[in-house]
Length: 123
Image 1 (cartoon, rainbow, N blue to C red):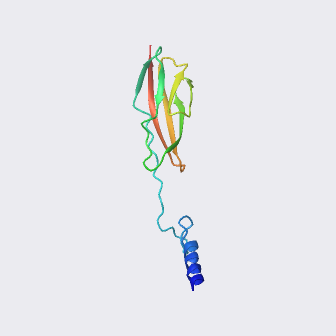
Image 2 (spheres, one colour):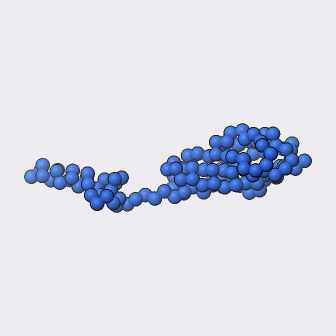
Image 3 (cartoon, helix red, strand yellow):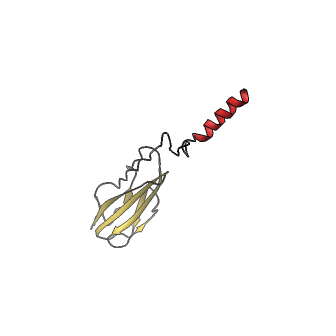
C-alpha cells in the first residue's frame, strides 16, 4: 500500500511540473516578467570645459534586477563614451553642439527598455 501511495505522489509530481506545466501542458501559475523602465534623465546642459556624464541609475526593474546597461550615441558629432555598459559613464571629445544618447536596459529575463536623453554643449 505504501508503494502505491508513493507511486501516486510521484506521478502527481511529474505531471504537475511548475515549469513545464501540468499533464494538459498548462502552467498553473505562470510568473510574467515585467519589463524594466529605462530612465536616461532629463535634458543635460554642459560647457565644453565641464566633465560631461550620462546617468541611468534612475532606471527601475519592478520584478527583478537590471542585468545590463548600454549607452549609444544616436545624434551629434561623434564622441567617446568612456564605458558604454555602465549605469553612469563619462564622455570625452565633446564639442559645442547638440547630442542625443540612448540608454538601453535589459533585465535578468531578457526584457528590454530604452530612453533617450538630449545633451547640449555650450562654449
